[in-house]
Length: 221
Image (cartoon, rainbow, N blue to C red):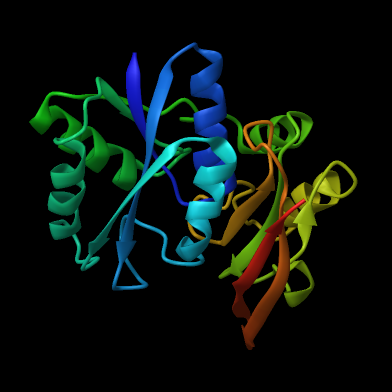
C-alpha cells in the first residue's frame, strides 16, 4: 500500500506515520498545506518552516502547497496535491476531530483514494503515553487553553513529566491530546528520525492566557 501522510510536525501526525510504517505500508511522501490564514479550519500554521528538517530526518519526500486557508475552499488545494501523487491512500493524525476527518474522507472519495486515520478515537491519555514509550519527544509550541500556563510553553514532554502533564490537563478539563487546538506540539525526536532535531533558538510570545513559540533555528544532534 502506497500512501501519503498529512503532517504538521506535531506529535499525532508524525506518530500516525510511525504506526503506518509498522503496518508495512510504504509512506512515499509527506504532505503539508501552508495556510495564509493562521486560523485555518483544517491546517496548522505554526513552525511549518521547520518541516524540511523533519522530512530530511525521516528520509521521506516533502510536498508543500500554499493555501488561502478559507473554510471549505482549502480542501480544493488539498485535492489538487493528492490527485497528482502515485498513491493508493492518505493517512492523517486525527484523533477526535470529526470536522477534519470527514473532510479528508470526502476529498479522498472524490479522487478515488482511501483515507486512513490510525489514531482515530484512541484514548488520548493512553495515546500520549504510547508516544512517549515509543521514543517520541516533543515540545509544546502553542497554547490556547485556559489552565495551561506559560510554564508549559516550550516544555518538552517526555517520560519524566508525561504523567504530570496528563494530570494537569485532566484537572483543567483540557483535551489530553490537544485535539481541539488547546495546544500544539513539535516532534524533536522519534524512532523515524535519523537524528534529533534540537531547537537552538526560538522566540516565545505570550499574551495574557495564551501564546506560541516561533522556532528560529534548529540543529541535528
